[in-house]
Length: 249
Ligand code: SAH
Image (cartoon, rainbow, N blue to C red):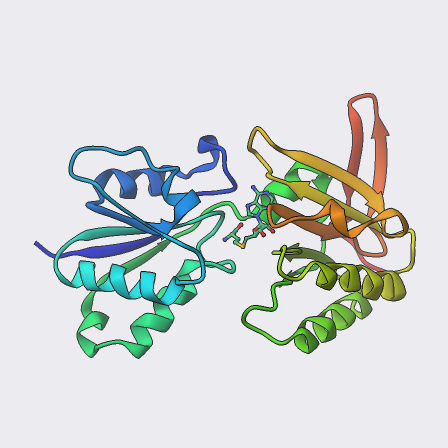
């Protein structure tokens, strides 16, 4: 029997936000590979092996998945959100590129998922309704200077911005500096959205101005969105809507 790999996105947390395509791949799998909390979202069943690994071993995990598929197994590599957004799809292709040529014959499909920035923006309205960019604030795999340059240029270009991995215990000062850079570039009144654990029971969404934003409003389960200069509010009896119009000046 010939094996395959599906690199699948599980969405932001709620099972309603897993696509039917991803659910079908999981139903056919012999093996699930991924970071511990994501593998924990897969219901165990007879004949399905769950391979949960710690974070930061993405390349080992990818090579393991490729090896199992080469041996004929049906492997689903799981990420949260979308697998192509700061997640396992690129790690798997890095391992494929560096690995044995025989691996290139393996059928590999990337199955998209709802990424955190889209789930977060939907909860408040449409802050990403015009041009925007997404920046990973983790400096694990890139120098801080690159992050700072991209922040400044994105602010200058007046993009709305979505930030992944805003803050970790190992580098709490990094996000404070990000807020300083943003206040200098965008001014104190610009809206900033802290969307934590979107679509889970722990969901918590706060909308404040850059002037009122503090580093402790973000953790590693938070997606941060900063509006463009045109991002605005509508007050309704059901709460505040935040959106960015489709036009630009
Ligand atoms: N592939 C994932 C992103 C992985 S990076 C995706 O497409 O969503 C991990 C970061 O994603 C977290 O630090 C956080 O910034 C964001 N994130 C993931 N799930 C989230 C959720 N349910 N709510 C808010 N942010 C989330």
